[in-house]
Image (cartoon, rainbow over all chains, first blue to last red; front, side, top):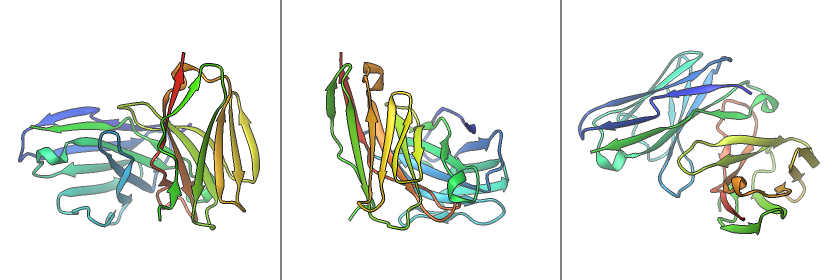
Length: 118
Length: 112
């Protein structure tokens, strides 16, 4: 199956600093990538849809100025958590779908990034 | 009303038994259906996908789809303790430019 690589796998940062998370599709071009957040024992929550070459589409309630998404190439999307606070501590996961047709579109997930803000 | 519904569980089965996981969805236009397994602290991994009505078998796993009833299930035969995880049902529609819609997951516990 297709491979999506996410980096870093874990990060600890101080409150008020910014953290960048990278998501790469290693063996396919992903025009669309998705960013999720998952709190302990809860389900995946879609944060935003990242579109190559255009602005990301954010889900309701997600602050676009706090969670900056850049999708500069067909293989890389980045999520920057700006001015992080302890309540931003969570498991962040990216995914990519390989094609634009429904039958090409299993979502492949990155390994996830465990963010802890202290 | 949630778009994809799953029983949160936990579903507890003895080792060697068949585990049956169920999922219903609300969007009749849905075209693709997926089962993911997620271990605690890890990201989801794809187990199976199904597009057409009926059964699809892959090793110990069988996915079943009934579009008329808007129902998807996953059967795990000869359940093993290593199958203990949360199983996420996901539904896709129209194009790959939209995220899959995930259920909240069913936690499966296989008792040795």
